[in-house]
Image (cartoon, rainbow, N blue to C red; front, side):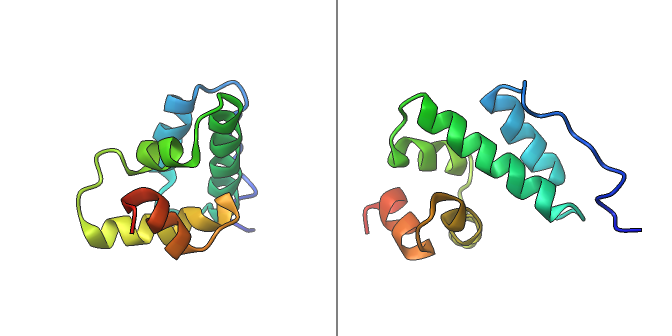
Length: 95
């Protein structure tokens, strides 16, 4: 049995803050497709609030201080945005 078959999370009524919390709890776990669904939901919600890509990136990087961790986040989240990791880093850091 695949590990995701038994896990069901009703995240449609969660706030963006709650979605971020769920993502942190699922980080490094055995539920990549659930995590990806929550990531897409979070991005869609933040865009619906008319947040710019830069503002969304700032939310995702909040409290992340290490360059290696930021690079990991760029690689993970860029496909959700439909951009490359380099474009994500350019938005985040202006490089």
